[in-house]
Image (cartoon, rainbow, N blue to C red; front, side, top):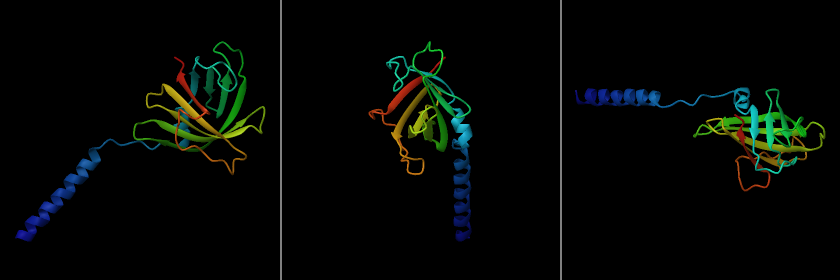
Amino acid sequence: MRKYGLWLALVGLVVCAMVLAGCGPKQKTLSDEEAYQRFVGTWVNTDYPGTPYQSHVTVIRPDHVGEDWLFVDSTSPAASWAIKVKKTWVDEKGDTYCQFFSKNIAFPTKIAAALMRVDKAGKVWECRSERAVSEDTAVYPEKIDSNDPFYWIYYRKE
């Protein structure tokens, strides 16, 4: 009888653990395309000087093209770059990350391996890049480092 009681208690604990595990918040797994769409939009930082290196506006288009607009009132982009997604993920805070290969459309030899992050609220976009020799040998950043010389931060244009 005692073995039966212990066995019942053990089964009860396992059932409780399974119920509690099912009650925890679930983080939805996103496809690379769903994650990429979180970056799509117009991003502004007028603290930057308005140069191709630090433009006032960055636009991430749905068709996997990024654009740098020198100033908020510019009539055309100063540079455009193709975005080839390598890997995406969502961290424990809900921020979305995207590692990608970047190639300047006008100057295809200007290439980089980059990491961008958008915060959970979708209001802050950060990017860090590393120069690359080729897509095959590119070393992709794993984290956003605001002290990196190739770091940028922009805010979603309302």
